[in-house]
Length: 192
Image (cartoon, rainbow, N blue to C red):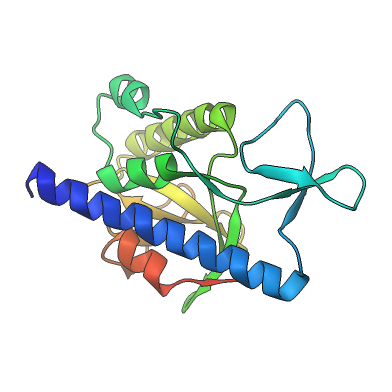
């Protein structure tokens, strides 16, 4: 794939993520009459925060496109001597958001995102830990981007192919859900 085609695919992924989050917010507002709320933590601010909610201590929020920051996985790739799949880099550098609940034909899940810049750094540390565990177990590297309601079951992409899989933490992926993260996002329905 040429870099031009890679750029188009990643622009498509960014658009797919934005479309899904827009649908999530529209569905949420239709069901609840307002934006989602989260407990406000003055030590953990986010560009997602909109305004104080009626419920004391809560704030309305919505996903926001990251435009004024250059988030990068260069430090992760350098630490692991590994190139991460471009889809996972695009996925985690497109939006700041709280987790978003969704469902697919396999069941319910929560898409993970960084809430702010510090959370992005914490996410990188968690990904390093996950990849080191996979390497120690002599398994193909995967990168998680969602969790399920089943204990220790995650949704990840295969770092080599970009395919989306279900896997039990510490085990090899056991069920392929989609050939790509774009295809997978297209199968999701928001759960609000």
